[in-house]
Length: 157
Ligand code: ZN
Figure 1 (cartoon, protein in one colour):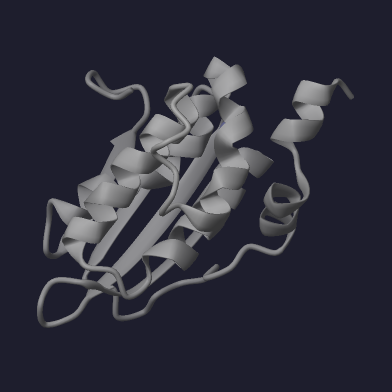
Figure 2 (cartoon, protein in one colour):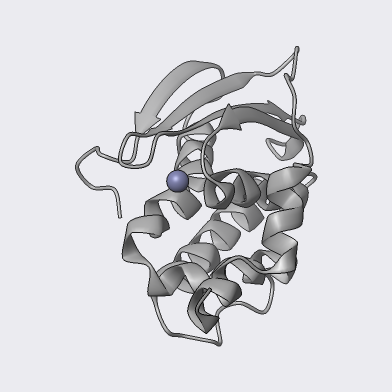
């Protein structure tokens, strides 16, 4: 492997893709979003339960696809559980900056999510990394029900 690929598939990422956290159905989810990345064949089914103030009380996912997409979902759910909506939106913006720009000053609050930063060198993998976050973005826009989103929709970046 080249050094760049080694950086992309570093230990944290591999660990989360092999043993994803918060993986499974959320039976009492208020919102379910099916995220689809046809460019790579990744799928994420995100289930979210909100607390009385609209925060993310519980968040779980199932799905299949490449290591990047599944590790990103695992890391995302770990980070988001118990967060307010505002925190979740802020994290989503920080993560998008992490994988799409060279800025290094945006990642302070991201913790283990910084393991995904190597993705920025592989533009075709950014959709994989962003897929669970695209599903989250949709989940935050609705308070109940089921939706499908795709990385191929206009406006996705
Ligand atoms: Zn993928």
